[in-house]
Length: 177
Figure 1 (cartoon, helix red, strand yellow):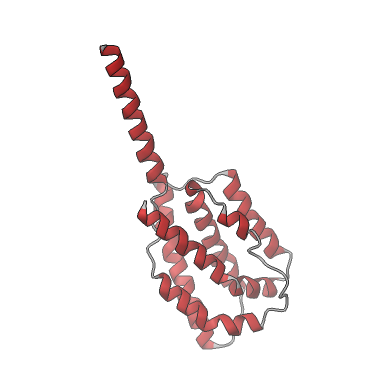
Figure 2 (figure 1 turned 180 degrees about the vertical axis):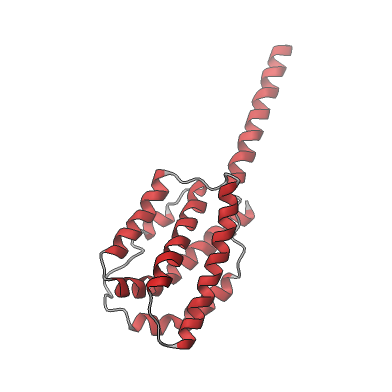
């Protein structure tokens, strides 16, 4: 009888610990004003998309893969796509209009802040990358590399709404977890 109680207690303790561990992996909140980001994008959207010479091509073609992202991979995919935009897209884009440049800089600064938050999660080992997550972001990099750099940057900026919607959706889900 005592053996059964001890076994039941150990099983319960293990389940609780696994549950806490799994939930902690999804708790990498991206604390940023999404409405401000979306408004900034809307203010530059038309100007950016009119420069897009490849209307039938997408960089974020892995949207299906992004939608199928497992909860434990959300942090990794978010971190990798933020790095993609900060390290490649924003740096590669050449903009002459100072108003648009200011809005892009504002978005880039918000992305840098989100990156900092996710780096803290990674240090705490709450942001692991599965091979699926790495592959999903690799496809985006490969799509970017297939276009000339200026065109790829314009295309990626024009598709920023897709990424912002994805962040908003997954941020809300992880905040509720």
